[in-house]
Image (tube, rainbow, N blue to C red; front, side, top):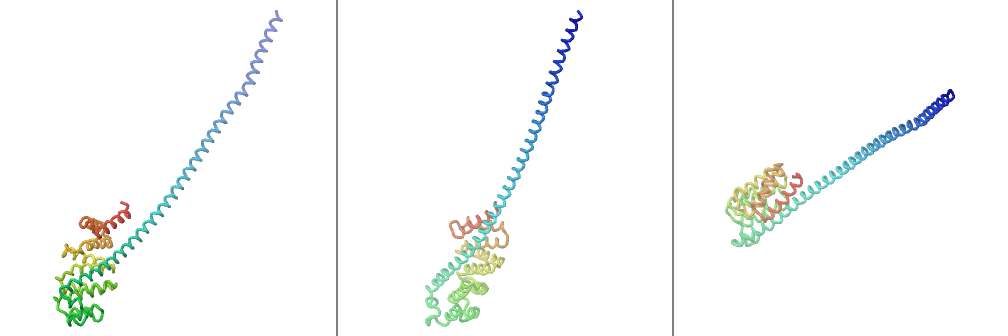
Length: 287
């Protein structure tokens, strides 16, 4: 009996030892599994942080690229503005040259009209022209002072008027704008009813415009438009009113004037030039 109890107790002790051993062997494995899981989590967090760093670096690179592109675009805009200014100056020079050419044709045509009704005046300077015609012809050729020549002839003499106009036009054609303005004013004062007075007002304005005296140029062009609205020079005068306003920094008035040129004189050369200037103004303002 005692032996049976001893064996039973020994068996129980053996079972408990086996369980304890199993627990001891299993615990390090469980602990190791827990450590590996924690290491994985740390590694995952490190990887996420690294990804964020890389993402932040990518954003910085993108910002730098955008800044470089903006700087490049700014350079292109400045270059385009320079090209527009160059074209503007070139167009202004071409328009002045065109005015001079038209003026030469105009002077020739205007001289022919009086000549048709007065042949001696058309041949001014020739022996058959007569004494009264020789005086202004000499002034037009530069052989005598123009004011003296104009004063020596009657104010109502068509030949004298034509000669005085030719003297003034010769001056502006030669680039002597100070003399041209003086002669055109003298012509307007002496021959206020002459058919060439509208032209004289226009070229008077041109002489001041060429010397950058824009306020007086503006007044001259406006005088033509107010006194002779039906003149052939009216479209060009209105265009130059707009140009003068631009030079005087009156942008809103200039835009309105140039728009008026396009609507009032459609199909004219002045309307075409006004439209081109309006387009350039729109590009420059970005509106």
